[in-house]
Length: 328
Image (cartoon, rainbow, N blue to C red; front, side, top):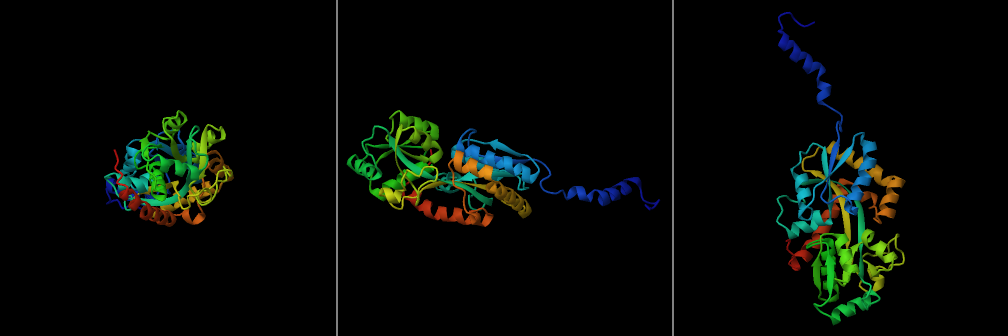
């Protein structure tokens, strides 16, 4: 019984303290979660997180709402994530470009290694080396010889300075002793249009963007920039088979949260993501429709993504800086 000497306001405060406590310790998640995607809607970098978000919604019991924040080679969206409250209700998509290359190309207001909590690596896509249909070279060795015979005259389309497509071309130059011009475009679609129109000679791009044209026989396809062939395109040789061994370049995608996000929230987001990546329908969408590779289980963890990102930075930052690549 509440003492008669206890005032009504004090009694109300006491009752709130007793019965209101469970409301303060809400089970996560208690409301919708925002997934920041630093790219425009419609492309493969947008479709991937949407497929995963739809499945994660069932596991988490709350909607996962996509927020496209574009511009600055992905830096604006990643900056939005860095500034978000670390409460578990905002996480974001990161890529090789946003969480490796951009830190060596741009002066960023955040640190890609220390200002985010890794959740998991979610997908990878080895790049494919292609050329316009009218180019004389019919295989990768012949392409290298043609490039050597035409120094500074040939051109390669890229998705912009510091993009994985750009760095793949720089790596090709370093591996083969060739020199050619880079022509920046505002994404894969206009880059492919430039290649099809014959405005540029070559392109190194994602399988999702390359394979439809390769199957239509509108471009020349030389090799996959990986140790092995793609399951989605077993007729395209690896670079090891095609004559430029070790030219391995993959785009990849991961999920991060703002620094300081509670561990239990990271664990629940990771568990929902791992369940999504194990779902047969999701796997078919990713590996079939988007021609992506799903990483092994040890990389589908926060520690696995952190180690993977660190290794990529150690590999690529020296190459980027040696090439003196600067963002526009």
